[in-house]
Length: 259
Image (cartoon, rainbow, N blue to C red; front, side, top):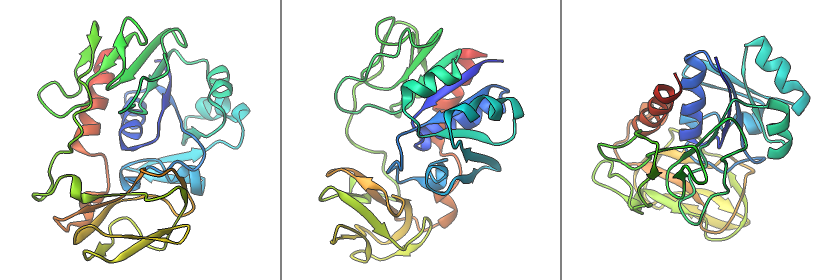
């Protein structure tokens, strides 16, 4: 089985890491320190803050040093995550497969082709045979999860799939750069207008009534415009946890492509 390095610990990157590990591959998950991904109940994001976390019964553990990644992979216990500089991680892991799951919605991603024997880019900006060896479609539709061997994924559409009749209004974005502070938790119930968090004193309120499907971790540093909050108006806390349909289909495409 392959040694795989996945970049990006959002719900999509985490699903890819989880499913590849279940398929028997040795997987390391990388992200920047204290990443602001809001869908933490669907991801391994919390391990970057709290050292460990669980997703669908799988334990992830943050490596204290890049030198520990090899022994952690050999042990086969917890899924290793790391926020060390990417170049150091790439050298330490020496992956057979590199997967960029950062989803570069705006602007061109850094080329990944040549950084590993097989480099896979997810979503917009990647072109198979140019800046990646393979590309995987990430847009909703019949082609979601399709492996592209020539050409590129669809451009970023900009509008999310509706939940409970609500689209973009489910989300709240950081009004300024700063440190995100909250005492709320994923799955909490909120009413429209409730204070949920603050960013350096700026109040962040719920845009709708429902449950918190997405909530950036307390203490994360966020840039202005970062998505920090998502409310699911369907009001079912269980829907905020576990691998979602879109990440699962993307992960399934990758597992099929490298099996």
